[in-house]
Image (cartoon, rainbow, N blue to C red):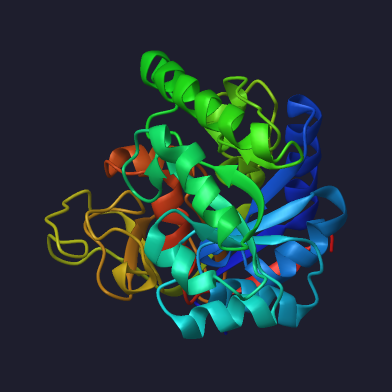
Length: 326
């Protein structure tokens, strides 16, 4: 019997992809890194391949797994290659590399691997300084690189001033690229940037694909529902509930769910702090019954001072999944 599992509504992910693409009116790059934010990258990608224009992942290994599963559309690896072995994997599986340094340029030179330039417009994670876009692109072309696009990332898309400043830098970099490569695909925005109207040549959507966004205007549908199994029931004895004093003296039951499954120990589910593999809740239940937990992942993320992305990835690792509406 499964202790914790997720039910993934694939129709919801398809709906979100179509809704976001219709809103942006440009090609949609579906971000399926970190196992599709805990939803299962291979199954999700195959299910939505007709509805999106390309995919983005965080590593060559993730891209290779999608190719092995049967995904045929372009797959962009957002992290730059670290060594020649990784470049060979990029080449073998027909993946697109992110190049934003001379080291990455040298690694992919002579391989024929498709390349998107990574440009730093303010996030300071990867990429060449935006002011050097034209010079660096010239180096890439002289080295024979197959450059097909350019991208950057907003570090605080919900802050209008920061967003506009980065967008202006990105536009300058984009103009430099288009001057040499008119057909290059230039993309900046993830979900929040997309909702703010920064579409460019494509949008690169992650959280919105799975039903989460800063705005609910598009009626995106969360795709994951979480359930846990009732392992025991009792009337309270003593004064505790898990790792915390609790004196309500009511009916309690134990869910086979804990911080070992990626949930936060500090709580937010049931009463008291979570044990490694158990959560105590209040109310009537039957052993073996399934209970839905965390109906509002955004509220849970806010309670713990983090993002829905972190919650999804933490919980999504290692739990079993059921897929509906495939």
